[in-house]
Length: 127
Image (cartoon, rainbow, N blue to C red):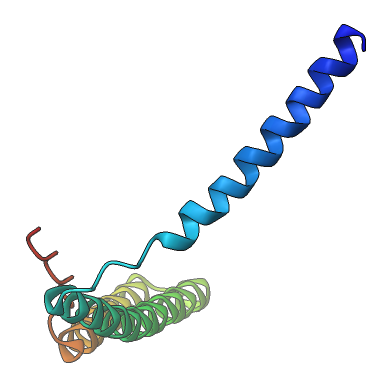
């Protein structure tokens, strides 16, 4: 036998030995028991994820409505200013715009307040 074939045979034998030993060692491991604290934490995290998703959906809806109200107020202002011929008419248009912006802000703040406090993530259990 030459040197190359002897080294190939030794390599195949070594691989066969190690590949069988690895699966036997893996089969002997048993899963660790899960503590009650960890189960409670996982449940709290699941509840938190649902609560934060609901909060974010409501907040996004409030922000979108606020943005739409501001855009509408600006469009109304631009139209009124373009049509206004006198300084009094322009002042009235600006006052109406200011009032619309204040109403949009109040509506937005009320919608965010109606959502309640932002959910807080649960604390990790001590090890």
